[in-house]
Image 1 (spheres, helix red, strand yellow):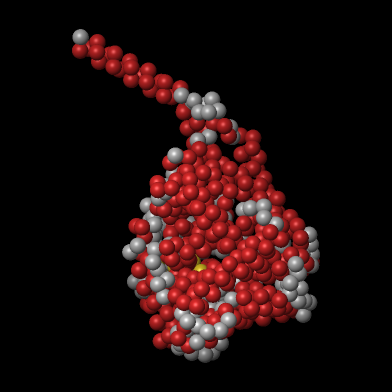
Image 2 (spheres, rainbow, N blue to C red; image 1 turned 60 degrees about the horizontal axis):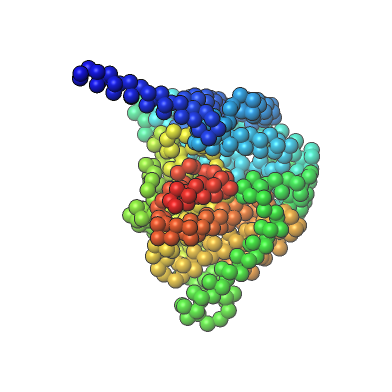
Length: 608
């Protein structure tokens, strides 16, 4: 009898399992078919990612991989064409070889994101020369030394040899770079005049010190190399030999690389003019429309973005006026701006003591927010974050603050960089908002969590959408206000000043690239409408000029996240949970804003 019962139960289990496997999704595919097709497409994503990593030695290093540790990236036109052909082949495979209706929900999201990226890359190939490969914001002249210093670890003698090998690769890379610059000039794309002196100065800074001259000072790269090998437990003669080889590479590869770039830039400067907008490019208007679409992941036009910016500037001015009254300041809002710009109480001194004090306070702000993260997040990153001053060789041209994500293998934390070159551009009342944006709950939370996601394709761990990422960063400046931070009204003014800055970006970026504003008109708009230092305004306008559309992402992204949060609040009422909402926003990694809205809508439906 017992045997009969056991057999019956076994039969029922088998039937139950069979029925489960036979259950079909809404498109009529069984669980087994969905699993099979999803595994197939995810295997393709992994293969594509692995092949891409193999093509970019510097990306390998950023991932903590030492596979081709002695190589730099290929910067040739042939390589660019090769990637274009790969994109077309991969798109063809996705289109012809995948049964989209048989994909799981997660695999379908990955499919849509990957396919859209390929389509955009292929469509944008015609604009592959519509940029400035070297400028005051980025480029090999500053990017390669920063990469060597911050990314190339030396844990043993082989790593040191690879460092020297990379130095020997500078000349080839820069030769390709100059060819790229010549190709752009051939179709009329030359940076405006202000760019040249900044790039030339950055380049000349690398060639200061030994072994380039006979001073006692070591050059930036030699100093970095010697500091790193000094920590190695290797024989003295081995260290001496490595130093000799590094000095030789600096003289025979790095020096001619920079001299070649400097020579070209000095000559091209004489052919440059003062036209600043993307409208001057071939098909410049169409290019800028595309740039805005890619940046914002919306279909907003330049005129619409411009108007949004004007309206937001007016709103924030009104909130600032309230603070002006609260602190008892007599005078206009413009007078208050001038007070905030010039009063010494708001600025650290420019000496070492003042800069050290700034960094100490920035670290304190990050550490304080760490203790409150449970109020905001369900998932928190494993990687830590540290605060660091921008290195001296690039601080003059770099932005006022930025973030570098941690190494995937945990060997390097996330880094919040503060630029202390000009302390008058780093007022104390903006410190909170900067730390929250670049550190936590901003970029470190979102990017580190994205990198640590499990069971998602690698391209989603390391990909990005500017409107999403920077929208989250700007939204993260606002969140602490609701938590009781910004207790000092001047600090709250600083938060508004940072938001105002991003609202002005909408106006000025579109003004320059769509309405043909001059550099000077853009600077004046910032100085008339914000409390920021003039140097801030100059740097920002020059950033707009060399990165068309990029700066529109912040405010558009923030406004969409706030809009979706309000939508969820109104729909869910008392059952709305901020921690759950944030989980919905960041749990998938970076996604376009329209896709984010789909996730929030699904979250609302699941709670009702």
